[in-house]
Image 1 (cartoon, rainbow, N blue to C red):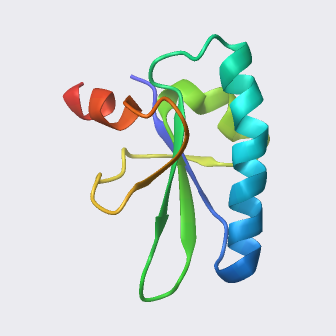
Image 2 (image 1 turned 90 degrees about the vertical axis):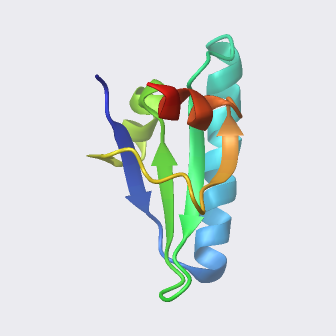
Length: 96
């Protein structure tokens, strides 16, 4: 089974900027790949610290490596925000 990947991107305006850059870079790759099921990026903001973490599904593994994301366990779905790719990827992952 392939693993998810995560990348902590800090907080505030810098995190917002980087999230936008990831989204802009991801969408053309996702579309060029034929919009595969299970390829997506999600984000979560930790309320106490304000730190934003991006989570890449196993289907987005090659893309996540370009940005230096590290393998991780599948994140709990609570608090995840869909960013780009297959909007149903989280539900599909939970079903596995």
